[in-house]
Image (cartoon, rainbow, N blue to C red):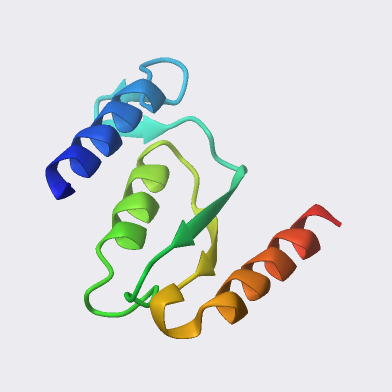
Length: 101
């Protein structure tokens, strides 16, 4: 399961990282071309809390988005659903509604 998930992320990263479109090479290394953009990322988890020491997903996404120039990243989370159930989902829905308003 984890291997398939990592393969899917690798595929998405490869599709999103486009030379000349989302980043470019310079004498000093690569530079993201999407500066000034904001990313909203919806994250769900059964038990892992976003930002905890066992959260490997959000730092990876933040790093990749920074690579393509997006530094303003907001994570909308429905975390620890196994413990919080419907409350976590409702909080996430509320966060999404406020972003869309």
